[in-house]
Amino acid sequence: MKTRLHSCNTFFLLVFVGVFLWVSGGAAKAASPVVSGTDGWLFLQQELRFLNSGPFWGEQAKAASRAKRADARDPTPAIVAFNQALAEKGVTLLLVPVPPKALIYSEYVPDADKGKVWGANIEQYYTILRDKGVRVLDLRQTFFSLKKKQDTPLYCREDTHWSGYGVTVAADEVAREIEQITAKGNTKYTADWRDIQISGDLRQMLGDVEKKETIAIREIVDDGGRVPEPDPLSPVLVLGDSHVLVFHDGGDMYARGAGLSDQLAFSLARPVDVIGVRGSGATPARLSLYRKVQRTGDYWSGKKVVIWCFAAREFTQSDGWRVLPIEP
Image (tube, rainbow, N blue to C red; front, side):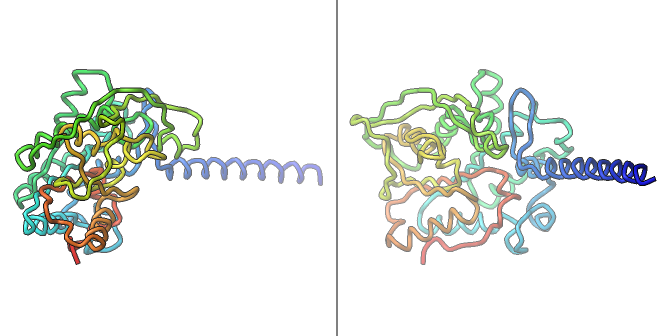
C-alpha cells in the first residue's frame, strides 16, 4: 500500500513539475524583449507593440503610450514646443524618426506578431506634425525603394539599429533636406568601406554573445586620418538616441567615424555637433541638450539646424514626452 501511495505521489509530483516548467517557459517566452523572425532576423518586441498600436496622439495617447505620466503620453506638445522654441532662436528643426526595422522588413516578422494596424498611423501623424509647422523627414519610402533595388540590408539583422549602409542613406537624405539652410564647409574628408563584426544588442538580449554578424561601414576620416569630432561651434546639431551614436561612439556602439554625424560631416564638408543618449531620444536627449546649453552659455549663437533623430517606436514606447525649455 505504501509503495502504491509513493508511486502516485511521485507521478503527481512529476506532473506538477512538468506543468510548472511548461507555464514558466511560456511566460518567459511571452516576456522576451526579442522576437525571432525568419532567415535569422531578430526584432525588438517594443517595436512590434508600436506598430500594432492605434493612433498614438491626442486622447488616443492614453491607451497607446507606455509612459506613466498622463501629461507626457502624447508626443505632439513636446515636439511642437521644441520646434517653436528653436524657431524663436532662428534655428530650424528637422525631425528624423528612424523607420521601424520590423516595418521595412516585415516579411521576416512572424505573421502572428503582425496586427491589422501595423504602422498604418505613422503617415497620418507626420501630416499632423507638418500641419503644425514641424519639418519631418520620412525615410520610409526611400528605404522601401532601396530595399527593392539592392541586397544590402538597411538594418542589422541581429541589432536594433540601422546598418552601416542604412545610416549613409539617412545621412544623404538629411544633407539634401538642409542644403538650403547651411552652407558647405571646406574640410576635406575621405570615405572608405570596410567590414566589421558585431554582436548585436538583440542577439545579446538572447544571451548569445558568441555569435557575430558581419556588416559593412563607411569610415570617414580627414586628411590627417582622424575621424570627425563633434564641433560645438558647428551650425548643425545632431540630437537623438543611440541611432545617433551607433558606429560613431565606439565601444558598445561598434565603431567610430561611421555614424550619422560622421556621414553628415562628409556630405557637408564640415564637422557637426552631436548630442546622443543610450536611451530614449524623446525627453532624455533634450535634457542633455538643455544641460549642455546651461554649461556653455551662448550655445545657440551660430546654430542653423537641429536634426532630431530617434527610433519611431519612441512615439509610444518611451518613458514620456515632457515639454522642456531649450535654455535656462
